[in-house]
Image (cartoon, rainbow, N blue to C red; front, side, top):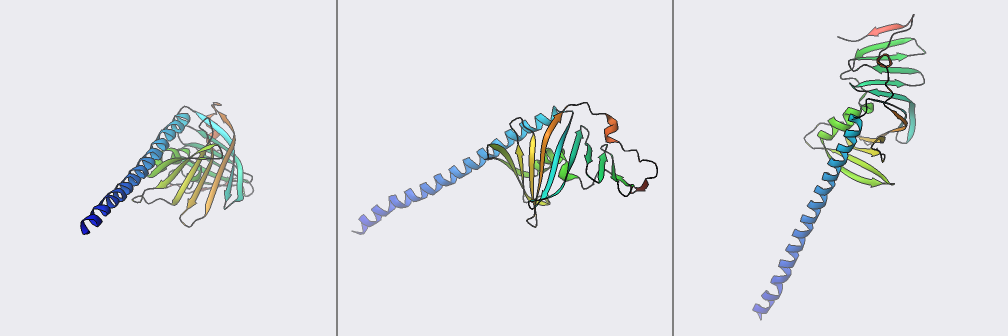
Length: 217
């Protein structure tokens, strides 16, 4: 009798272990597949921006769902950037950063490297952050979304970032959840590509009477 009981239990144990093993393998395959799709899709977005010499767009920044700033943004190869806001203009030629306050007629000059403009940096979100994160692809409201979760061995300043991409591989929204749980959204619209923007667009010449504060070392 004991022999029968032993015989009847053995297949059940074998089936359960095999089932768990198959579930584990399936989960692993799905995980790898999602990462592979994310990698391929990211490469397509990178190709789009590599083939773009310059661009402009309208943008809006929201913090925890509330609008904070909006304006016009211009990019050009070489990390050149221009932000036109209501009361200020921020310009960088890739080396120097000018922050001009119209009302105060004051410009603060600093080095572009290390400046707090990472929220608007295409290079950061397409090259730097992905290299330090696990990148997967999701679908939401008929849009493809790249999801970046920092790897545990990297000291990143956010928990998760989502990059919503249009059908022609342009970034239309970036969502960033910081370490404290606050969420910042950057939305882009009305793109114009390859307009041959002049170099002068990314250099600032202070108007006469401007108070100049140079913080460069």
